[in-house]
Image (cartoon, rainbow, N blue to C red; front, side):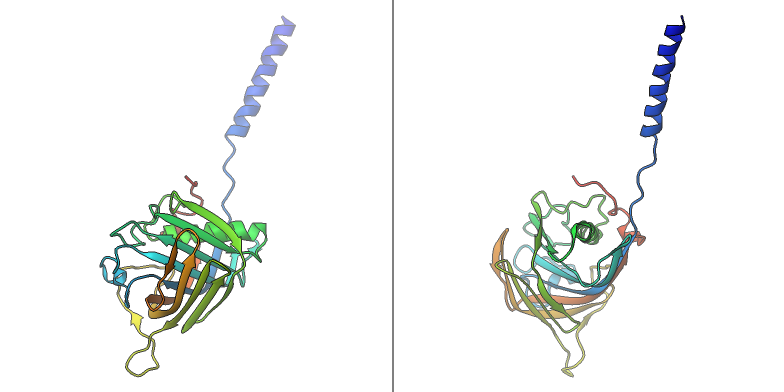
Length: 246
C-alpha cells in the first residue's frame, strides 16, 4: 500500500512539474527603436507611379531599400552606424507595397560589421518595417528569401545616397529639386502612407545595378529619399513584431 502511495505521489509530482513548465509565460520580446536616413530605387520612370496609386511603369517593381541607422537599439544591443539593405521584386502588375509577403524574391543584406546579436536584431527590424506596409501578421516577405552578412559601403544624406555590395549592388541616387534648383521635390499626401517615414522626397538614380537573385541595370530611373524613425510600440508595427516566420 505504501509503495502504491509513493508511486502515485511521484506521478503527481512529475505531472505538476510538467504543468508548471508548460504554463510558463512566453519570454518578453525586446523593445527596439531606430532612426536614420533611407533611400530606395526601382525600375519605374520618374516619378514612380506607385506613390500615386498607379501600377509600376514596367509591369512590376524591382526595389532596393537602404537603411542607414544613425541611432538605434534592440533591447540593450546598440545598432548605431550599421546598414541594412533589402532587395525584392513584386509579382507582375503589382506594386511592391501591396505584395510584401508574396514577393517573387527577397534578400536581406546585413552589415558584416555587426556581431551575431546585432545581425539578428537588424534582420527582425528590417522585416518588421517592410511588413508594416500591409500590417502583415508575419515577418516573411517571400517564399524565396535569403539573409546574408556582406560588406556594405554606403553613405546617405537627404540629397544623395550611395551603397555598394561588391559583386552584388551598385547604387547611387540624387534628390530632384524644384524650379529654384535648391528645394527638394517632396511627395505630399501620396497614396503610400508610412507613419515611421512620414516625409518622402523624389529622386533619380545615377546608377542602379544589381546581380544576385536577379540581374538588372535600371540607371536613370526613379528613386526616393526619407528620414525614418521607428520603435516597436508603434501601432503599425504591432502585427509584425515577434510574429513567427513561416
